[in-house]
Length: 455
Image (cartoon, rainbow, N blue to C red):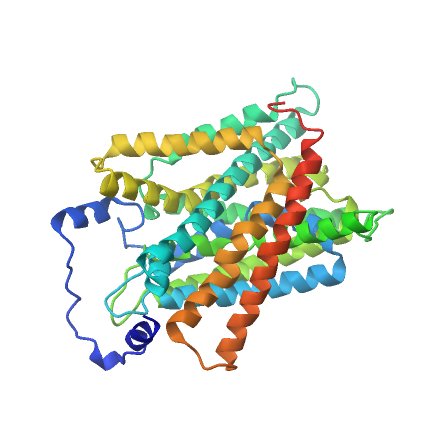
């Protein structure tokens, strides 16, 4: 299979015909594809790619980076941050390139790319479980983040004058917005929301590091590792690795985003898509590194797992930043939910033979939002969730699965630059996958000891 794929990928451009490839789909299949969220619209622009990717990546993760730095320390923290940015930019480039590597074929979904590389059944089982874990767990974390940020906004504005309200109710308030917005049909329809979310992420990231600079270095700042025991240091270090992995998790929706961009033989979708990715990753660089390093510089190992919680003054600015987080995670939730909606509706319509329509969409998507709300209310272990899921699922789909697919398809010469780069990412990603969840799971257990359900 690999030889056949490599031959197809390497096919010279002059073999392409000027005529569009024949569409072998039936009328019913075309009707379903025109209804499903990922393939319904191909009118996206390059800037759609930019702010969808910013919305997908810069979110809850950026606020935990100072905390991750406090678990790793200056040297390892800077090294892991820099390597993560470089490795994930490389693997994201691979996915953009592979979207249309076969003439006349677009891999609109992550699992379609996996099926092409590994076979129909094996590819499905390799990609879909991991992708679903990533996207569902992210939506749960965003549900928690939205609720916590709403509560922080409420507490800052009231300043002790209002009745204390449980976190559970704020998560419900956040979820109420998702019940409505989730009925928007596809990526193009959430473009405005995604743009607003991307702008908010830039604003609150700037507030996070700017307010830290304004506060200055604390008098008693301590840059030693958070834990006092050797075992605690090891577990914290592993949890920090998982949190770093979580911060670079946009790959799980990149093919679905690219699917919304039109493509022709003269202007393939990878050109505007890559232009948008470069802009997005530049923004990521300008958001992540200042927040991580300045936040840790200012507060050391006393920083919270959400930097905005550590920043209490000026109150009006921190309140505004928390509301910006709410707006951003509303968009982030939708960007990650859209591929899940696509999978759900594909199964319901194609396998279970339900009729496509607004009623099916209303019921299925509302059930998904209700599920993420329930889990978020029940297990709001924000930092631990990031560390656990970051290593377990985000590392494979972001750091090394694209490299494995690339090696399977293109078969670069052994010890060539491409071969070495891919194996470097694979080894690093596997280590993240194995080691990251250990620290995150320990943190969840530690927090669960004192947590009261639905408090």
